Amino acid sequence: AQSVTQPDIHITVSEGASLELRCNYSYGATPYLFWYVQSPGQGLQLLLKYFSGDTLVQGIKGFEAEFKRSQSSFNLRKPSVHWSDAAEYFCAVGEGNGGFKTIFGAGTRLFVKA
Amino acid sequence: DTGVSQDPRHKITKRGQNVTFRCDPISEHNRLYWYRQTLGQGPEFLTYFQNEAQLEKSRLLSDRFSAERPKGSFSTLEIQRTEQGDSAMYLCASSFGSDRGYEQYFGPGTRLTVT
Image 1: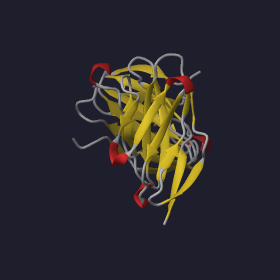
Image 2: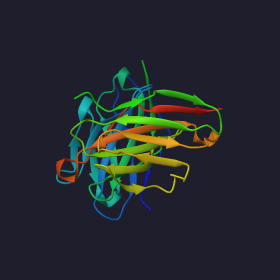
Image 3: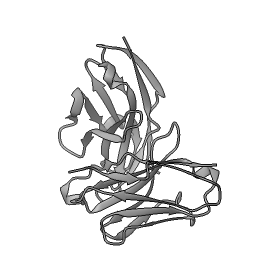
Image 4: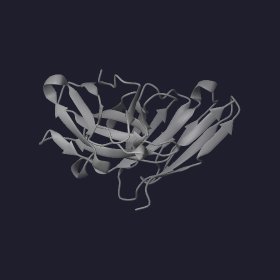
């Protein structure tokens, strides 16, 4: 069965420091990959997606992610974290025709310290 | 584009009661999805519609759960004879079909508490 693993339950970084959130997936074919962010009381917001092509994808809010097929990974990065980035981050893989069934990881909660 | 909306935002019910949630997708989207999210977990896929047809249901969707999308627009999710284990956030999402991109846009969710 397809699965998504986010090894870090929570991460704390200092404001202005760089960030990398890890994501590994298990999927037989070329996956549709996503990163979502969820702030308290807010809905899930799509940060970026990968379907094909360039393996380094740019998203909103200064985030980027790199698809590495050999490592089955899709890690999320940001060069300089802002206090407003504190939230829960979910990696997800889409399966099925057009990726309709999205399988989410358990999430990584990001804390930002001043 | 007003986004995906869900109603109600919060629902408290007693065990054994029936509840119904509504989702209004983005109007141009023909796909609609339901997910359930419990504390500390990512959303879990429940079911999805393409227009009015329900094309996939998760094993998580027991026979107490039913979803409809009668005219291919809004959708309802009904839970009969609620149990405490049904307490969760129920999320709705919508998207275009496969030829217009796959990303799903999520609503704010309905938080269900079963007492």
